[in-house]
Every structure is written in C-alpha cells, then in structure tokens.
Length: 149
Image 1 (cartoon, rainbow, N blue to C red):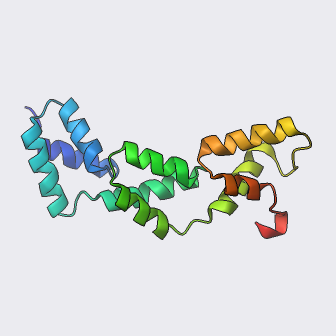
Image 2: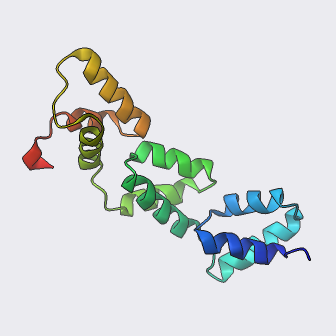
C-alpha cells in the first residue's frame, strides 16, 4: 500500500524540521504529483506543522554548535529554499557571539598558541573563512586573549 503525500511529509517532519523547499523536493523524489505536493505543504503550514522560520532557527543553532559561521549558515539556508528575509530575521534573533565562536573554533582546531609565521596564520584564516566567518571575525579571533573568551 502506497503512503499518501501527507503521511510521508509528516513522517519527514517527525524526524527533523524541514524547509518547505526540502519537503517539496523529497516528496517529488518519492514520485508525488506537484499539485498534490503544493497542497500538502500548504496544509502543513496552516496546521503549524511546517515552518521555514522554525526550520531556520533550528538550523542556525545546530550549525553554530558545530562551529560554522554566519556566512556559511546563511548560504546553506538559502540553498535549502529559505527566503532571504527569514534568514536575516533569524540570524539577527540568534543570540550568538560570532566573534567568540570564531576564536573558539580556531583554538579547538589549532590550539591556544598563536601562529608564529605567515603560512600558519594563513592556513588558520582559510579554515575559518571556509567555516563561514567574516574577515572581521577571523581577524578578531587572533586578537582575543584567554580572559576575553
């Protein structure tokens, strides 16, 4: 017996929050009709079971806890179909000190010691940039002392 699009979507949401775009993509891959997918997602939104805002808040917390910066998190949310205004609002509401997080990530990966040559510092800067921290956050991560973190 084939599962309905609604039941399938609810089972996806039971595991974790999904953006409407992600949910539509998964249901499309499962072979459901586009109109049926749109109807199901609209019903889930109206019932409060699917929310891009809730998804974005959860995603931001999760990725920040794993040591990723605001630039990368925003890009990943955009890739998942979350609207720019929702991303901006949720990033502003997230009570995360990105400067401190950048310093913590740098120290966790490379230790407390400051790099003693240009090559080592450049390597650390590239790592933090890849992780999604801004130039200012990266620069400041080298300036924070232990008592400031």
